[in-house]
Length: 118
Image (tube, rainbow, N blue to C red; front, top):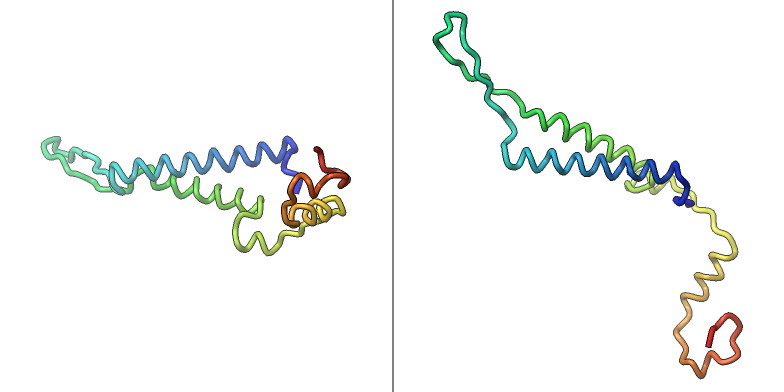
C-alpha cells in the first residue's frame, strides 16, 4: 500500500482529527456527565423549572466516532476491512523478506557476501 501520497495524508489527517475530537468530547462527558440541566421560567415568571437533556458533547462524540470508523475502514484498520485488503507484492519485497528472515551472521562470515557493507 502506497500511503505516501498527498490524498492519503489528508485522509489520515481526517482520521486523526476525528479521533482527537471524539476523545475530547468523551473527556468532557466524563467530567460533566451525560446530561445537563436547563433552567426554564414558567409563564407566570415566578417558578424555575429544570429541564434535563442530553449533553451536547454526546452528539459530537457519536459523530466523531462514526467518522473515525469510516476512516479506519478506508485504511483497512478494522477486522472486516482487513478481509477485503489485497496486497500486491513484488520480487524486491520477497527478496527483502528472505534477507531479513535469515539468521544474523558475524562480520567474518559476511566477508565477500554481495550487498553486505563491511
